[in-house]
Image (cartoon, rainbow, N blue to C red; front, side, top):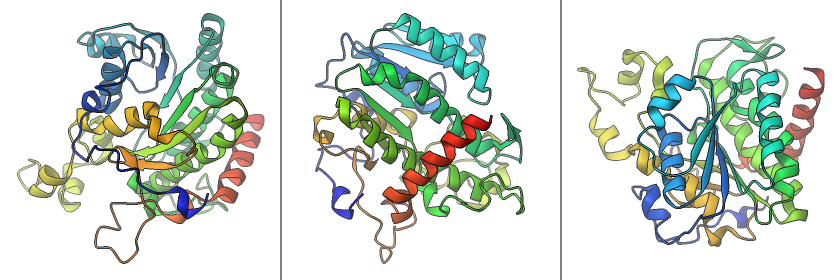
Length: 325
């Protein structure tokens, strides 16, 4: 992907725009969406916003009870079906159910994820953050490709993060089998993988007019932080010593409603037509990271997360991992 592709569109929105504001002039009546992780945090607000504009939304769930409670406040056409991204058999069963039931799939929002968790293995032994954030969604998307390909203008949105800046994919040891596990390196790798996935997928959807994008939703307090002890969040500057949000967090963090805005913008904005595979933030296309900027740690997209060759390399590796699973 050329640097010239990462040019903000002057969308008219900003960091604190909400999903409802982004969709104010959008009608999704007759559209069908799948939102993974759609009953918690920004996923829940994504479902709420899409359903409010007329979309029929399917939410894959690990816990039917928890999902029912969380989604009770959402108005519109929303239904759930069992799925666990850490279980490829579960992913296949969900995809089979969906493909037998639907004729079209307009939006696939790969929102679910885990962050900075203790070392764990999923599937055939994959490192859990890579396995859930990337491989589970890779498997799901592959299985749903026939539906996406037969839906004019279908879009896939992959939730990445500014954490992609932590590191590139650890190409020689993706599963941390030879090196000591580092929870933040593993998370950074997974978020880079999400961006590269959207890059590669955009080329595979091009023939049928589909689009794929990655997004950084922003800093948001959600259940994603469940593995982080209070002491670590204090050290990161997110919390004060009393456990309350710091001034940095109050100023820079978003609410879940604001955090869902870039996702729904990428899923619906006409400004993204003809701009496949780009990385978005603050409800617009992100600019390439300026290494000389004092905000380079937080804003923009690094070159390693938008590299075409790396995206294709990761796709090939992911295909092989699935075949071996």
